[in-house]
Image 1: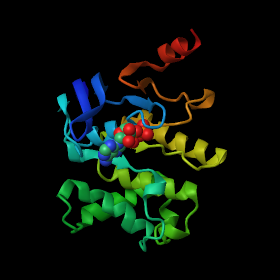
Image 2 (image 1 turned 120 degrees about the vertical axis):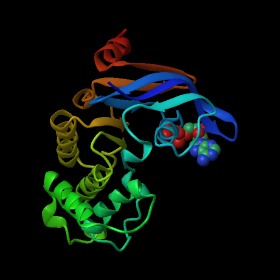
Image 3 (image 1 turned 180 degrees about the vertical axis):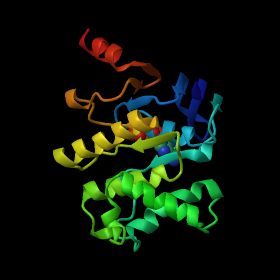
Length: 225
Ligand code: ADP
């Protein structure tokens, strides 16, 4: 079953398209990597999928989910590392997306946040200050936060940026588990699509006004032709 359908989609700014003619679906439980050079429109596409910018042309249809129940994990560098908040507060704030940003938390929200911390094995960091964490720990916190908004789909913007090989492998294992075990659809913008990182089922590759959408196998075959 489809979660999102994009038809003849054009996205951009001030009437000028960065991407156009995009056609693809996100199905339940999909794992899709978005790849492309700097400036190819990866972030623009994420903004479009999250409903933060409106299509210039074409249509995005949300079939079995609401826009505000897509979990979003921003690039770590876009989060103010000195923000004086505890890990628990940051994870809990992930529940706000569904409440039209009214800052009231219920007991259910708090339980939900604690569950997500446990799921990612970081319950022990609950009271720590975000500013004191390592890069790998911060990424897990931001992942737990994104999960508070959803049970169906997360969008991750370069989650392995600035991580060492060990932290990167650990984070990918968690993301794979969320996808396989909990059937959460994953859309992940990534820079390092190398051999040990061909973890998605499908790839959306943005190249100027041209794009590829298909299976990872097909994509790799195409690269070697
Ligand atoms: P990527 O994430 O692949 O690096 P972006 O989606 O950030 O690419 O950018 C694609 C193009 O859109 C770039 O040419 C960039 O300059 C332009 N762009 C990005 N954000 C804005 C904005 N807020 N206003 C105008 N142009 C933008």
